Length: 262
Length: 262
Image (tube, rainbow over all chains, first blue to last red):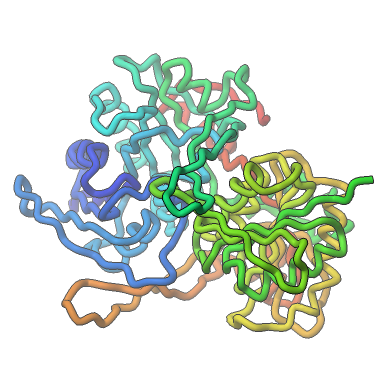
């Protein structure tokens, strides 16, 4: 039987530690193709490159000359798109993204390039999972999460995921996980986001920074709560963002086309 | 009574025709602040700028010297973030984004910088609406949609929107709208997305292009169907992307933290 094919990408760039670790782990489960940004694309969300051509370069892997590793000048979403059409020898059975240095819990998923790639994979009908670690370090110990990453990827390879649903998996930085929890997205936003940048030309220039504000710190069923309490968080994410619950309130604005969920 | 304050942004850039038209229309409803990208940011999604400082420059508006118009070097989401902290004299009562040249219906919302700004406004707790026109032209006649744009913005100014819900409004390019419909997001993806870019250095280089594939062309309750049939489409969008319906299926992966919707 043909080996399973796993496409790997990330948003920290092809040279990041997290994607090297993820590649090692996925090689336990099947054939691997890596197509990742040529440098860091943090905060790339689902961005695509419309205004310039995207380049793709094969990188030599001295230890594994047969491993297909490509650096792409585009965003994480571009990486998935170009991998599927221009690189992969067949349709992947699984797309994994990460391991991101920094968590993508709560509403931060909307900004996440890691999850942008996962959402793109999901749009293409391929089971897709993002992995992120709540850390500020570029070099960290991923070993406490290895077993869970392999277990989750193996589960998805065997069982697939429901149509139009992907997974957002986040880990806290701990020596030993308290366990894994299936969670919902926490409500939470960033505040106090700009600091003035000194510059020699008198322009108004600012650096994006900020502090995360958990809007429901006492809810125990959220991804953020899980991370705060030492658990890994598995949050199933769907492509359909329609707010069906407000259709009635909006009837005054438009002919109510009574919706049926797809 | 103090005038309502409306923040305007877009992803086609501060010089685009669509934002000029939107500014004219919003001046009928209140005070206006414009903070928009200094050039086109199509496909920016919810991207944020993490790796460089963002600049902000006031632009002179010869016709209206008191109108506050700023060009920002960042993404549409950056524009909203920086407008709220560094530009607006008070919290806006409404954020509008657009009018985008090109539709943002179906799953294309995930790539949309227009809707990225709207999602950001929604995260900040401000009623937010995106307007897009299905057109390929940089110069088009927005007059068939003016009344609807003012009516929708006025409705949202008066009534607000449900917490964590924003609106995605798309128009077809028609001389006269068949009507307005409240719709769900259509299922649909882009296919055949890359063409090889000729280049003199022998690199693998590609341009992103593609063809939209409607995965449910016969469903009459979608935004895409509405546009195809001459209707304006109002799609309510929510921040919470959690797929609650798959929690049971994932119980094997993690301690089932029985969720309650927030």
